[in-house]
Length: 135
Image (cartoon, rainbow, N blue to C red):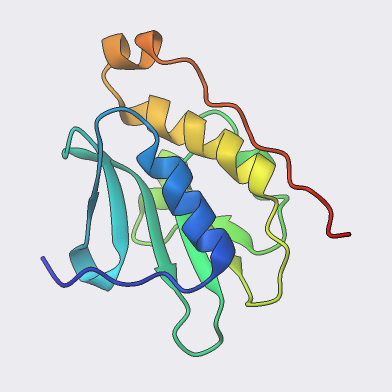
């Protein structure tokens, strides 16, 4: 296990906070990236910063809506054979406006895909906060 990386992008930090709100979620740091796991066992989200360009990426297990997720700009099937199991990686540049409401919805699907059924059934989906427009 390597040292905890610091996510720099504000939207990456927002998604991290949303991931940690799920029950029995822990953050681990294999390969120099954040991995979010249910009960410390099964990963449902991997995240990391793009060190060179200031962007960031997130990979989630989407067994039901992986084809839909591929319509988002910067989305692709995750490498290392994970794409065959429904994993999708989203890559965003430093200035890209990531669709946070959609990512939060996908995050819920990813968590439920690996969480124990009893735990998943007992947890209501989190409300997606609405972003206020700058005045």
